[in-house]
Amino acid sequence: MSDTSDQSAAETPFLQDPLTRRWLTSSAILALGLVVGGYLLGNGLLRAHAAERSVTVRGLAERDVTADLATWTLSYSSTAADLATAQAGVDRDTQSIRQFFEDLGFPADAIQPSAVNVTQFTTDGVPSSTVRQRMTLRSTDIKRAQAAVKRQFELVRKGVVLEEGSGMAYTFTKLNDIKPEMVADATKDARAAAEQFADDSGTSVGGIKSATQGYFEINARDGDSGGGWGQTDTPFKKVRVVTTIDFYLR
Image (tube, rainbow, N blue to C red; front, side, top):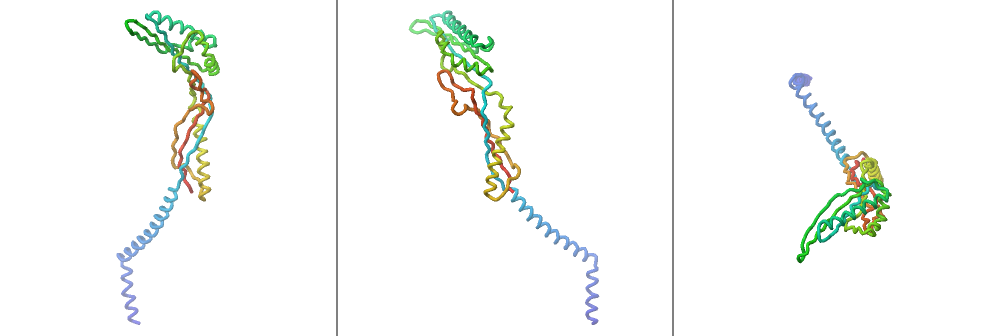
C-alpha cells in the first residue's frame, strides 16, 4: 500500500509541473490542429475538384435584317485623239447619269464625283487620250436604289458604258443596335446545350466560368445572293454570331 502511494506521489508533481502542463497542452492543440487542418484540406480539395467541373459549349444567334444604306459606284470613260474631246465625252455621260437619277427621284446631292483619271499615250505616232471618271450614289432609300439597279440598262441606251466594278453595294449600319439582344440569344442557346449535356451526365448547370464572344458576320441571306449584270449585292442580309461559353457543372 505504501508503494502505490509513493508512486502516485511521484507522478503528481510531474503532472503539476507548469512546463510539463504547457507542453501537454501545446501537443494537444497541435494534434487537434492537424486533424482539423487535414479535414479542411481534404474538404477544400473536394470543393476545388468540384469547381473544376465544367462544360464548354457554343451558342448561335441569327437574325434577318435589311440594309439601310445603298452605295453605287459607276465607273465610265471616254477615249479620243485629244484630251478635250475625251473630256467632252465624259461630261456627256455625267449629265446622262445625273438625269437618270433625277428622273428616279434622287436628290441632286445623292450622286457625287468620287474619282477622275486621265491617261495620254501615243501608238504608232497617233496620240490618244482617255478620261475615266467615277460617280457615287449614296442613299438610305433602299427601295429606290433597287429600282435604279433594275433600270440601269437605260444608261446603256443613252450611250453610257459602265465599266467592270460598277455595282450596287448594300450595307447594314445598325449592328450595334441589335448586338446586345443577339449576344443574349446566343448565351441562351449555349445554356440550352449545356443543360442537355448536364442531363445526360446526371449533373446540373451552374454559372458561367468564362465566355468568348465571336465575331459578328453579315452575309447575304440564303437564296438572296444577288447576281446579274451590275448587281453584285443584295439588301437582304443575315447577321450571325457564335459565342463560346464555359459553364460550371454541379
